[in-house]
Length: 296
Image (cartoon, rainbow, N blue to C red; front, side, top):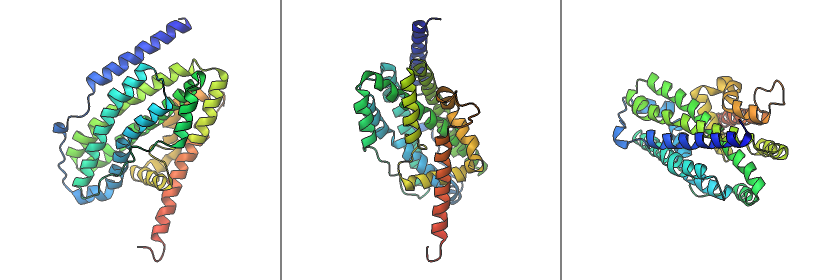
């Protein structure tokens, strides 16, 4: 198969994939959701902060779309269709459902940042107006999407098991299960896109992607120190901190293969593992501060 033929084949696969996601996985019907909770206090105590974190991240997709419009001034049409017509509507619905659940448990609503576009993103957008650099920016977008969605797949699976273990079947089967069924399709889009674009990058572009990725990687939803500790708490509640390396390896396996295949023996890109360990440590340090004498 020639390079041009392969490229067209990959593009057709992406378009078909986005079509299927749009038609087969519309935003979750609110009438299908059962907010019945047997023991609100226990669910709130055990998983309330997890629901809040996930709701915030899902609702911040509105800001993510603004960032994408800034980063990618001239995206492929399939990318625009995916994030505007499929990903954003699905994720916002996830966030609204999770946020309604946590408020029904007596918790305050999530406080997402839906409109701040960082200076870093604006710089990437400016660079993206240079044709060959937009491919670098696109690759960073796909890699971030892969890590985000793979993290979501794993986290929602763990949350589903935990909520079901509490006997909260309505929540596990009509809220968490439908959400977790939609996340793998998002991951597949980013993986197909990343693999297709990686094969087209020049050596210098791949080198630049590696360097920018190493200095910009952060776990999903982490934009400041408090959120880093919050993510660490989520890891702890879901049991991820028991084997951070395995979790980091799972979310970054394709990234490792695309960017770091020349590094023989590398299980996890070091910046990925460092970011997750940093979150776990931040949560532990905050817990110690809160338990210090004189703190309530």
